Image 1 (cartoon, rainbow, N blue to C red):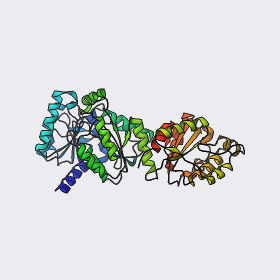
Image 2 (image 1 turned 30 degrees about the vertical axis):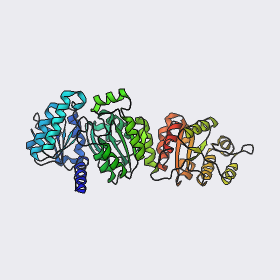
Image 3 (image 1 turned 90 degrees about the horizontal axis):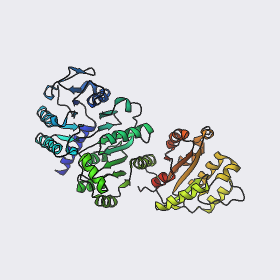
Length: 463
């Protein structure tokens, strides 16, 4: 029986993330309105089975517009609602009578705004249960399926079309506008390719456990990152995470008393028991982030490494003694240590170092650069470290300017291409070059950061 229930839940979520037919209730012909953006985004995905619903129009974006849900030509897989909150209970009733069993409410004005909004949300849920409808939201951004280029969201069409790329990362975000901004930054900066992005808002029905259960079986999802303000069902969360089999990174909002009050007014989340959530995360081995940039940093690293071995003994390759010292301090803070280089590694390093310098870790290769050139110094040093069994991970420092861009990056870092351990890079110098360097280096599976501590925090992540 429980197996059948799980399959029913998975099938329900599949219809939200990969629907064959969609109705947009509250569609608009005004480009400034969310109801226009939702419809425009879905045109490329399912034009032939996409149905705008609004009694004000006969046609929207070249599609026949229906005056009511009852007039729809089929029982669509998904109804997206973008109408004033007060109208939504009636819309759900209409969906139930029409045989629609998935409704996504992207409108705001529900439990997050107070008592009256909570009453409307409770009425929506009661009507949904009457008709056995699964509800997604309200107060959410919707869904992006990067593999299918399906954007069921009020995100503006011009924002995502050129930058949405498929990849191994799925996101769960308990927010509307923050998830839109977060997603835009992820896509435009090229942090990682996207499998799925799910904004669950007030999660009056569908919650993070439903999505995690689905993503556990989703072959295109290899890493999951999540922002939530509370756990909807801690017991079920434990069960789902224990069977997840994939890295999960969590940013939890509402840890402080003031943050908890803000969460209550944002998505009506009963936050504030962050101590209990943190204890559960520790027990389950859930990886933690503490702001959005760090969440992207760590997610990117896991997506690039994908199965590369982890260890606590790190070699630092730097052009600056001071940077090596700072990196060593950050290793200590994260529970990592400087690797003890083997005699063979030290012998190999001596071949590029001046006679007056004894190689050690951190490996300050500036004298080797002056003696042997930047390309040979980096390549030789990295080759020696990669072959040292005492080195579990490598943190590479690089000063960047336009002259460096003319060098062969592939050959400069070639030893790391087949490295079984983890490597991360810190950049400093001409920031105008950073994007180009990052795009080149990360094709080798090496995450690149503009701050030392960010890369070392990633290296400290457990599998």
